[in-house]
Every structure is written in structure tokens, then in C-alpha cells.
Amino acid sequence: MSEIEYDVLVVGGGNAALCAALSARETGASVLVLERAPEGERGGNSSYTEGLMRFAYTGSDDIRALSPDLTPEEMDSDFGSYTEDMFFDDMARITHNRTDPDLCEILVRQSNATMHWMAKQGVKFYPQFGRQSFKVDGKFKFWGGATLAAWGGGQGLVDSLYAAVKKAGIDVRYNAWVRELISSDAGVEGVVVKLDGVTQQVRAKSVVLACGGFEANSEWRTKYLGPGWDLAKVRGSKFNTGDGLDMALKVGAQPKGNWSGCHAVGWERYAEDFGDLSVTGDYERDSYPWSIMVNATGKRFLDEGADIRNYTYAKYGKVILEQPGQFAWQIFDSTVVHLLRPEYKTRRVTRVVANTLEELVDKMGDVDRETFLKTVRDYNASITRDVPFDPTVKDGRRTDGLDIPKSNWANPIETGPFEAYAVTCGITFTFGGLRISTDAQAIDGGEQVIPGLYVAGELVGGLFYFNYPGATGLMSGAVFGRIAGRNAAIAAQASKESIRAAKVSAM
Image (cartoon, rainbow, N blue to C red):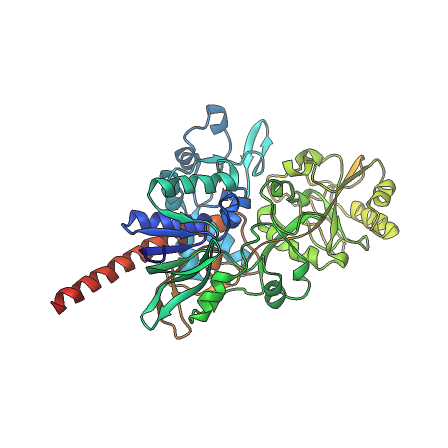
């Protein structure tokens, strides 16, 4: 392989990388994908997701266009709308107005078109009835701005993209650990890769880095995110150790974004240290808006109802990690357990059930008993019970007078049997990345683009700060992957034409 020169090399094997590869190929480039993982673990973090995509749409016609196989009964749902203005507002609000305006505009404006492009590649989309909607008056009502997911979830998305890659004639190599960029004053010209244990060079006109952040690197987590982050569980791929960031920085790429921030959620307390595709879907614990959460001292420590789950879940893992012992318990009254997401009903869950609160806290075993009982009493007494409960909107059913309020969905914990679920912090991906142009080209410390180097996926710096609107990661990966692949192919073609012209001139 070291004797073959490709137009475009794509480093990575997930959603962003595969979108880059497909985009480069349809622009006319010869393409090689280098995936560090073995074939059975391919796909990076994309394989571990629900496959949910946040994109701008105006109504049910947009949903039907992307999900043409919906039955009449399924179409008779309240899909609402999620306009570009709503998308912009969410990105600004969630990131405290720090999101890069140029990159954010590209993400939002191209989200709908990118969904249709992915559908043309063979990705099938279907509404997330089970996780993004509730039945109201017999009709499904969607909430939170994230409606469609890839059929088969993250693994279905990845499998569909690999099928498209194969059909397009794109070469893929697994067990290909890229360790270094080959560069000169002329720019990036290939990579050094350890392929099936043999280190070699592969030349290319352009390289796209789309190989994830540093969430699976405990040393880097501690270095950049801070003390205690070495103790976090990794939700996804164990191969996302920051290699792409490291090799880009070494050739002068400029870091950008929230390097001390990440996407981290409430996760099964006793989950494995890294993601396992066979069980990871069982470990999400995102129904906390209907609960109260307590730590080992028996106290609440955050506002479980501050906002809809899609706008808080990615920041609450950090708060859980900061609690004594790095764990918490989610406590549910029997009147809301029917609203729990499917993963709460799996076998791989740390759950206790009891008819009384006293029995519940005793079964939990590691929570201060008296403080817990007082916490629940005070919480129940503070609820504005004249406000009706509505899980599909921020209902304003709140507490009054507590040091830590619950701003919405404040239902009392008083009707047994009660259920409690143990959670810890699960890190999804890191926010720190590389500065790129609007063409997805890496920019160096001198504010110049680095010829031949393009960036997509988690390595894009400047989009997310502090928090993240749920389902934006896959959308960002697809949007910027498509842009990176196309421009990498255009640059490769220009390079070949320049070489041909030089040869003709020399004759």
C-alpha cells in the first residue's frame, strides 16, 4: 500500500470520516479510509449513539420526505417544527453565546440538505417515537428539536455508510493506526500508519482528519478537563485517544474551542470503563427530569428540571462526577415510572425498589439516611401542585423556597413503590479541537491554512462550549465531513493539474 498514492486519505472510520470519504469520491477523488479499530469495532463514537440527528425542518412534510415509509398512523403525529432560527437560538443559548458564528451558520443552514444527501447515500431515517415523543390525547407529540434517527441507531448509520463506501469503490483499511502526518513547507502530503503491525508511509494530495477527540485518553482528560476526570467512564470508542489532535498540533495546527469542556452524561454506575457495542445502549440514564437526584450525603445537588433533557443531559455528567464518590441516585415516584426510557428496563441496571422511602434508602446503602429523608420531605412540601404536569414542554411545575430549585416537572416523591437508579459520569466526547476555515481546512498559528489538511467531526473546535444541544454531534460530523471531503478532493485535483502543467512546461 505504501507504493500507492491516493488523492484523499481519510483518517477515522465513523460518521464524519465516512461522509468525508463519500463526498471526496463523488467529487472525483481516489480515496482511502484508515480506521484504527478492527472491523468488528469500526465506526468510532458514531456506533455508540442512538443515531439521532438534529436538523432544521418546517413541518411534517420534511419528515415525510426523509421517512417515506411511515404509515398513515405514524404520520398522524405532532412533529412540530424546528426552524433554523430555533436551531441558532439553541446553539447560542446552550453555549453561552460562544459558538463560532461562521461554523454555526454552516451547521444550521446545511443541516437539512445534508440529511437529504445522507438519504441519497442509503441512510434511512425514522422518527424516534420511543425516546423523543410522548403520547398526548392519543397522538405522539415530539419535543426537544431532535426528531429523526438513523434506522438501526448508531450501528445502523455506520453500516449504511460503509455500504455506500463499498459501493462507491472507496478503499478501507482496518487496524490502521495513523501516528503521524507527513508534511513539508508545501503542506501535508500523507501519513505514517501502523497497519496490521507494520509501520509505513502512505502518500496523498490531501488528508482529512476525522478520528475523534481525546475522551478515551485518561491522561489527556486529567490534563485538560481537570482532576477526577481520569475516573469517568467512557461511553464510546476506546480508540479515541487524541491522535488526530496530537499529530495536527505537531505540524502547527491552531487549537480552538473549549479544551476544558466535554459532553458527559449520567451513566450506569457500574458500567465498563469503555464502550461495549453489545451493551452500551443499556447504560443511559436520561429520564432524570422526572426524578430527584441525591448524592452520598442525601442531598440534591442540581436542578433536574432546568430544561428539557436534550439541553441538559450533556452537562450533568460533570456535576455527578463532582459529587462524593463520583456517583448519585435518581429517585422516582411510582406515578412517573411509565415515562422512563427503555434502557431503565434492561437487565444491566443498578436499581433498588421499595414500598417506603425508609426501606429505599436502606437498600441504596451508601446514602445518608436521615438527610435523604429530610431532603425528600422538604422537596415534597415545596412543590407548586396547582400547576399541571406536562412531560412534553417545560411545564412550570416547580418548587418554591429550596436552595436548589426544581424548575419544571416537580412531582412529589410520595407514592410507592419507589425506584432508585445509581449513576456516575459517562464521557461522550471532548469539545477542544482545531481551528478550521469555512472550507474545513486546518488553520495554523500564523492564521494561514495548512495546505492538504482538512478536519471534521469531534476535531472541529469552536462549536460547543460548556454544553451541547442533543443530537448535534452527528449532524456536525456529517455537515463538516461532507465539506472537508469535497474540498480535499478539489485541492487534490488542483494539485494534480499543477503537476501536469509543470511537466508540460518542462518539456
